Image (cartoon, rainbow, N blue to C red; front, side):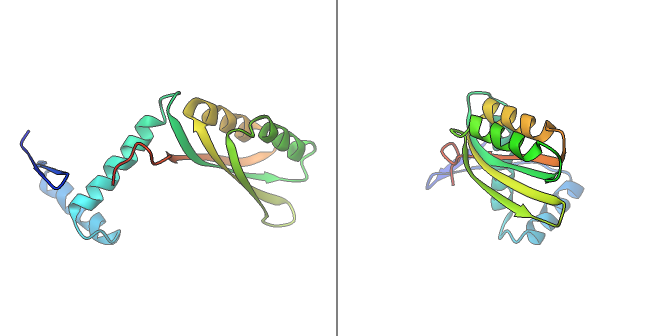
Length: 145
């Protein structure tokens, strides 16, 4: 693999078939990147974040989004209890009333990947939660420009 270094940047070549390269260039333009390198660097970062979230001891940050019917008996209290049990990982919460029946709650979380996934699983599996999603990112410490 041929590499050249300049100002902390490493250059390397990548071989792609024509169709894949055309798709990359189209995506690069559509997303507003000024060049392929920036687009590829962001894709690599996204894959690294996904890779790191698989490691239980890796510190991650993210959101847990819940959509639920607040009329479901005991559900709001159960969600609150789970959150209080994990207050060391939950940084903040936002609660919104979407309509007469539905509420959305977004929890900002930061901690060990395994703990975050466990909390998300408990909240999402709670009876009465209509939809839930864990979105994970890095804390930024392990990512470079």
